[in-house]
Image 1: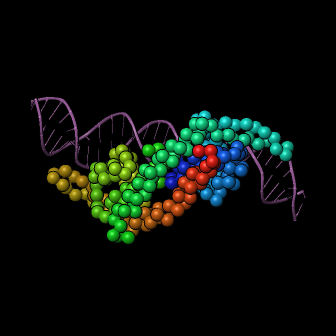
Image 2 (image 1 turned 180 degrees about the vertical axis):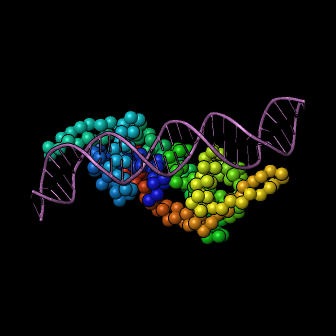
Image 3 (image 1 turned 90 degrees about the horizontal axis):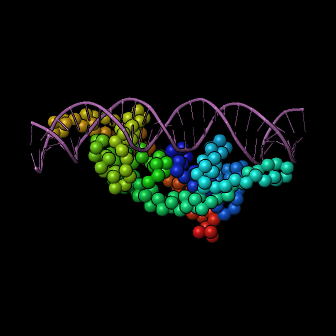
Length: 106
Length: 106
DNA sequence: GACAATACCTCGTGTTACGATGTATAGCGT
DNA sequence: ACGCTATACATCGTAACACGAGGTATTGTC
């Protein structure tokens, strides 16, 4: 998928992935794989950004002798998801414009 | 609308705007306004980029004593639009993922 | 004992949208 | 005559962002 097209959606994808249950980096990537591919470097950048924006909180926990950083969504994070949903009508508007224009030349 | 969300769509919007009829900078902005807002600096950057990618050709013409640069879409430009349409199922997949996840907490 | 999988992180780079700014002409009101 | 808005083009610097390349460390598995 085109990189540019992903932008603005990746943040929300990550938030959606931790919405129903706290999760950690490696699992988020695997959970998102069927939906959208993202590299580790991308994910950790996003997680840092979302933490800075107070859209999630972090908690370190040990699991089978390995450290994991669990991410938990905040109210700001939930608000971000809802904002995304609200903006979707504009996105569909753009899509329809692209499909409509010059339809007779398809 | 969120800047990041626009990315990957603006190029295609501009191509769609000139698809059925050759157009020029100022008109493209006005035609796209109901659909998506973009500044002049953004548009001219995009037009240069699309020209470099051979997705459109340029022709300078005089109109009422003022110079205008008319942009014409090429087969590569049309292909870009079709590629965008093909990718749309993935975009909808992402949207559905975001809406689905943690639905019970809405 | 090599290798994949799990789990985290950093740095540099290229792409890109935008505001600020500049140039120039046409037309309109006062 | 003068200012203002609309038309029409263009450049520059900046900040955001996704990614590849690379690094560290542990736990299985063959």
